[in-house]
View 1 (cartoon, rainbow, N blue to C red):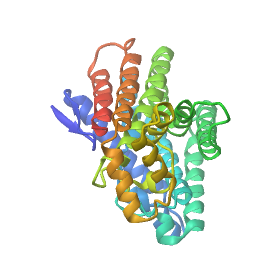
View 2 (cartoon, rainbow, N blue to C red):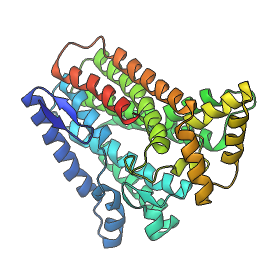
View 3 (cartoon, helix red, strand yellow):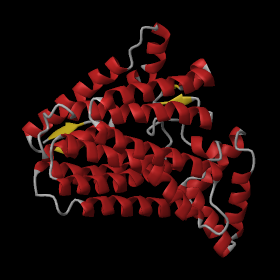
View 4 (cartoon, rainbow, N blue to C red):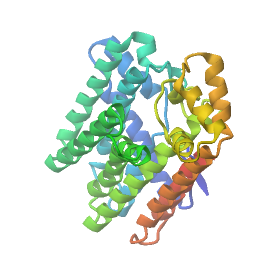
Length: 336
């Protein structure tokens, strides 16, 4: 049994392990090539997060999905580069919107060079992804465009908040299905499609990616509160400090509204206050870590991961399927 990637994904077949490792190495080379510019400063800014590392979750999924067809097909690696470039571009923009100082254990681009450079660098990465995508054919362009529309729609919905009468938790799940699930769904779809897998397999891996993507984001929500390290790649409690409503906080507010417990109401009042104050932020984080709302968010993470696992049922039994199932376990493990 060998291990692939930062998730500690176990792969029992040496040929599969070699394929995935070689594919991820090729993606890394492709990312560095795609982020080069004739302007040295642009290269430095564009490669800032590439060189900082990352989970490469989406390229990993592309390569596992490609095992259901020809994993050496010429479109597999470029499509993995496209989804990772798109993801990286959104991180540059997200950090500007969230005023984040740290990303992947290093200073965020906006903290280092300012918001304008960070936004424009994200745009540069989108442009490079589109350039690669054009060589993969009109169907790939359409799929990516639809996913990008969903991603941006999810971001706008998050900013706008739920409409009157809409359950905030349901609204939030729609938001992350767009913001995170859409691109991870494309990862599964591109891997299967570019490898020439059967259309039914492409559909299965698209559904799997969507559900796993939601579980992945929910695990990040839990990590933002539960982790006392930089395991999530950013400072713990960042979302909390910026007032971004994540699932544990939404569950807390729902419980406070339903039951009216004084401790819950007091914690909501604390969250509504100025969490840029370090002492208030630390208190809020400590109280959320022991609140049942955090455990409820963990259960939701498990539920979506199990839904992803169930989506794989129609696929033939093989090492690639076993690895995809273990990926569900790895996502849940991140949430504790």
